Image (cartoon, rainbow, N blue to C red; front, side):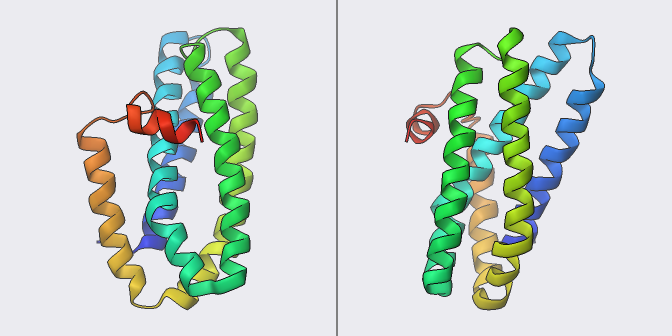
Length: 163
């Protein structure tokens, strides 16, 4: 079973792999559209896990520093959610989608780098044994989200994307 940090990093690697597949699907619009939907769903689920479970624990354990790091991460999540809404509105197709998507991916890459070099090492130090418990909670919640196929089109996720 992954702890919370390993789970977050694993999600990051999955999105990176999907993005590589997307880049390799030139000239295959249907394939690119499918991968784009999968990336958006993975990002939406990942953001929900962090916002509902991981970030509150970071804020509790890291105090002011945690609040500051989480505030920055939430701002980046908000930008990503706005891009996902734009992609959904265009049904993940059309000429504008490529630019919206590339801008979103640049933001996600920045977020991942910041999270993995700043937030996660501090959380690893301060959360102690809670990291294992949190990982189990996050894994269970992730399974629920995936099993119910509540992708970016679900009502709950739609409401969160609009925050």
